[in-house]
Length: 310
Image (cartoon, rainbow, N blue to C red):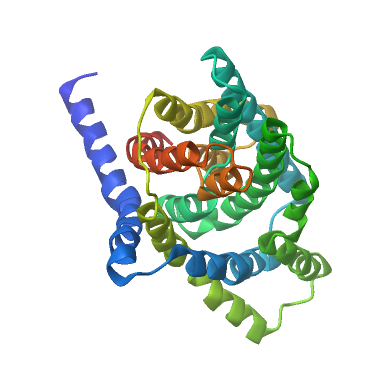
């Protein structure tokens, strides 16, 4: 590589960082600083996003989505295999490092539950534009569903808990919103204008609210202790995830925006939902939450590189 090529690559990297990554992290930083300053708690905001903004966004996108059934099935198949693969990778890394049953399970949680909502949706839209909304949303829904089942199952295994919580994924508002959305989509019946506009307005609030809430949640973390396990678990998620996606995506014949979006969603940092599951099952919640925070900061570097390469 000569100096001209190197300079061109550095310019491209800098532009991606400035125009795609920076806006997302600024909103997270806003939440991080104004949360303690204004004594804003993350819970009310996250519940509002969870029960109102996210399902409205999903309904608005899926009800009007134009995507071939065969392509949608390929995307869902890819997501399932990629999620299982990265979960197995997290398990194997935990075992290779001779970690306890609990820490190995925590590795699986961190590796599996990517932040495909707060981070994935805005980053992908900033990078590719509105054309990426539909595939990004399909991957978002599939990833949340599959991750929830895997993570709750692993947490139950580690703590000898019941599996009843796995089925609560079917009560997730975002998943429930898919049902009426598909009815409108498949039947060809147009969504009433007032419903379309209402869901559109609520959906537009989802991304900024979720990013600010993520920052507030990070500010609420009391104990931060970075060690080798935190770094290793984050690396499995941020590097292992996209590498596995790159290997698997040709097997499903995905190309273009569906291919790139699938790889990017697999590269997102760990989601706060992983720490919520860890807290619910008393599965080393301090370690999981710290790793969620660290992986988010670590992803500034990894996502900038991946966004530039794709």
